[in-house]
Image (cartoon, rainbow, N blue to C red; front, side):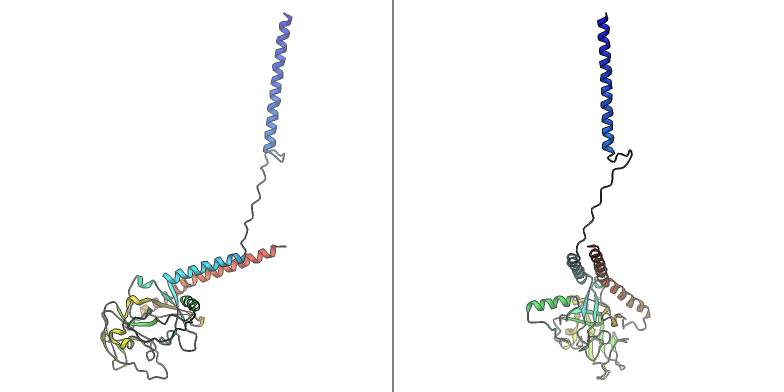
Length: 326
């Protein structure tokens, strides 16, 4: 009997020992978990945030070619599809557009989109490819005999930085398809469909008599244009090209775009009017004819403004980076 009781007590002591051992193990595990969650030893403290990696700034000289490439791409897209800058090489459009010998020829912004939504109208100043029937050139394009240099000149001409192709011509539309044009009445005015034109833009060369050269009536077919220069005594236009008549007309398909704005030199910044000379006293169009050129000028100036702002930002960043270096 004694032996049985003794062995039962031993087993109870062993069970209690096991329980205490398990409790110690559980306590040690909880402490270990708490120490892992709280490396600083402060209960409830959040782990320290990882330091941010500082973004490495590209150097100005690495970013500059990218900026130039983006600017050239934007300029190419705009020049191809939206607007293009042309140099006025001759004085045939004086005094609306300067191109006099020895002076700085005007750089004009030509809208290439407008005729995708409508047809050329009388009074508009347009740039067009010289038709095959035109046998006179108002200037000689100064191109190098070196093929590479000539290619560079062509690229410069596309951006209004060099003399243009001599086959690009600028004139004002006087009559369109379906109209009859002739000159002149007893007051020295061109007639369209028997009505005199209101041509306040005509310029008379001081050394010549202020009298227009007369020409026989011409019926303008559909799809053709009759064009004249504003410098009426010094312009090779529809009156003379190809001997006059139908040979002097310009196909609508040859038109590159409408002249909107004089962009250079700065002293000449202005819109190019497109008052219809057949609409005598039409003052309502004045706001439109100068409002659209202003919008076109702002549109063409946007890439240059963007590029200038980007370059200034890059220069400031480069200057700050240089100042932070020891």
